[in-house]
Length: 185
Image (cartoon, rainbow, N blue to C red; front, top):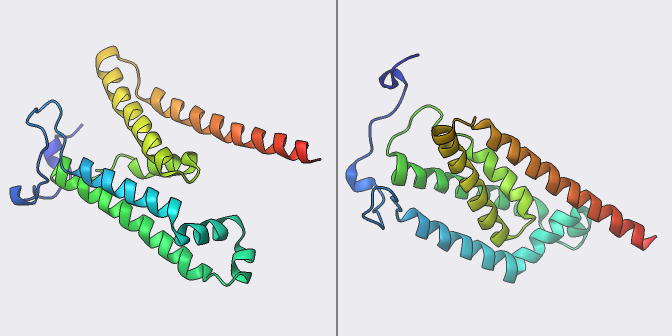
């Protein structure tokens, strides 16, 4: 075991760079990042529900060849979508750094990117689904930490639950697909 002082980390960010807190309670330190995240979720939801960009993205996702034949610039659209997703991921890391941790340290993300990937896949293209799934996985992660501290239950139980959720949702999607294909025959 080593002391936490020996782990590589940056200096703490300046106080003027920290996101302002919305509450004065140290037990619930909500910061401005929650509002920025809500605004971003609404903007993405509206864009993906009511814009021509949404229709083009769905066309490329459902059938790349048909989208190309329809005259959609698939390469540009895919690169734009990937860049936008990366920008949102970077913004999330920035909000976490400026609002909660206030310094960079080794392993600061604790697997949030993987959780985000799973949430995105399970939401099946729904912005509201992403928000609900992110809250659910966040509650699972937080509850796992508290469960380990207070009840002595290993936090790996949360990883097992997350895996079971992924398998159950994937199995349900496969079952629905098979049932629909049997109805058409």
